[in-house]
Amino acid sequence: MKILALAGSNSPQSINKDLVAYAAQLSGLPFTLLDLTAYDEVPLYSTLRQQRDGFPPEIEALYALIQAHDGLLIASPEHNGSMPAVFKNVIDWLSRIQMKFLGQKPVLLLSAAPGPNGGRTNLQTLASLVPWWGANLVGSYSLGRYAEMMQKGVLAETEQAQLQTQLNAFVKALEQAALSLAA
Image 1 (cartoon, rainbow, N blue to C red):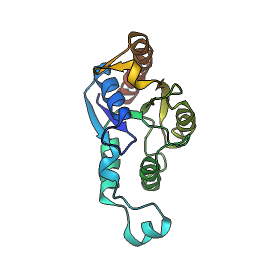
Image 2 (image 1 turned 90 degrees about the vertical axis):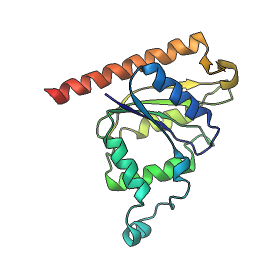
Image 3 (image 1 turned 30 degrees about the vertical axis):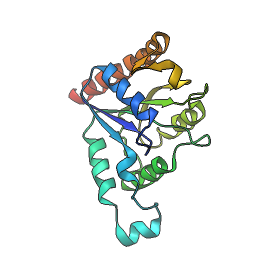
């Protein structure tokens, strides 16, 4: 089993990239870490652009990468209560290749923020959307007060216990998916 750890941010210093990498390591599974800095130049989605130019090569490669993994950890910052524009644009393109591009793969949503809310508003929105994209949503984890809770690359004990509970459910969902594919 291998997982894709995706940071829905194009910030080079993304705390959500740090969180998703931390969670992926904590899962104990092999993983690929991906952030969206490579997708800054993907044109804004429009049906006219798709009809005229087809799909951007970066989006086709990302679609193939998602298909090659068994599950996803997705960490997204909250921009004005929603996902960042670059993340939304990537989703818009992927959903045009295949609306259910996540193919019933287990997904665990994460978010980190400097404030106490920890991106919960965006996580609620994403939780309502990922099933449309074909995900088997396993759960979510929100980390507020990031600078206080993540010291020198180590998550505070109480927070780590909460994250580990969510990761255990994620790994169990991956195992169940693998068993059903083998049957």
